[in-house]
Length: 131
Image (cartoon, rainbow, N blue to C red; front, side, top):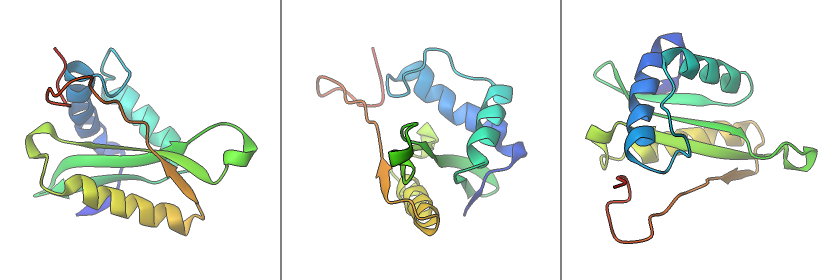
């Protein structure tokens, strides 16, 4: 089930995101934010853009959101998207379902461009794990 986030999701958002901060280079952060910080971010982003979670058996297993792509007025109809899926449940189509729901919500807002900043490793190692 895909639904908008709420305050009770903050701990799950922090848990999912922590893996990517601590074990990969894709977040561009060095310290995983705690539940309070994730809730602050969720509230800030949710004021203007969709912030969605994927739920399975009552447990949050992934999330997606969009935020301003660039601060200039000409970019008002462009966003940057982020999607994170619980590391233990990857490759089950959750990310795709989140993206499709996010895209639909953004389209209804009149957003024309969805951008993603993607970090790619330099070799053939697992793209989700850093040494």
